[in-house]
Image (tube, rainbow, N blue to C red):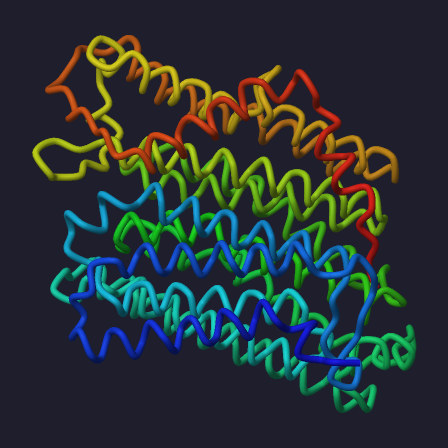
Length: 470
């Protein structure tokens, strides 16, 4: 068996990063087609992933897995990274962060995510996690002369280091009490009587909850979302979520599946806490990026509700929810990139006042995307929540479903408040007309996908139905 063929996407991405680094050194960071090369390398990596065999393959002493779950999640990671780079093109240019380093670090973080998604071993998972995390720290503080960006990077680094320490402690306990770092061997050696390993699971869940910004381990999210450059915020809000949720699913359903009754309660608590905090804390926000941070916390709560069911149907509903959430977030941040006057980007929600009178098409996009985030039928966001609640009700977790429904109603308030400001408040100075085709394409794709999803709502079910957890 030629192992290189199975890790070809990761190898290609690694060599692409090395090539871009060399170009950056020789051209002193002023190579104009750098973004084109970055997106081209992502497209080729995407094609290599899509071309991988649809079978379960374990390599490197069964510590690295290629299966349909990893293939689907890698495709999502690469696809949404490309769309985020397209939508943030103008912002990156105007804010003078279109440097070789920005794209190299972005690609490096994606490489870390691909390793995380296929990891089948605690040590390999940790290597992928650290590669991703180190790159995200740098991206958050990329505008070195901006105090808010520097503060965001520092906060994320300190809190993430704490979470990583807890995660590593959990991994060491799992290794100590099961005698292995391989997921399958851990599963075979883990049972209800292995209290030390169960104690380790708690620390691992805390570390993973931090990475997906689930309450009460969300404290970094609002400040980092607000302080980071908006292009980085959109990347944070979309791309790393795929790898983090995949790892969460893989951990819960492979090494820890034999003690499901022990971790299920913790995941239910994380889900409820995230849904409540995301619904309540966002109400008083005036900065749209902070609002999107609390929205992200709430939506991760709904995704975790599917994981908490302990069933394959629950996992599939969580993945469907994640896909729809990514599309909605892509559209939301495309709208935020449109909030520009004379090369200055605005973030206050009140700056949207009376937008419908000057830019009706942008206003319609805001309406569709935020109605969908609120879960209003017949938009895609409604179906995402419907699938989650159905999987939760099927396993008779009625309290979780009721709390989810109540928080959906509460969170609708702050989404509808933005629509009210856009359509009913007095008009302010109009935003510039932006003709960047990448940004417009991202906004059109996301808006139309959300709006017309009800025509064929089973499309994602058909795609995700084949996913099994190994």
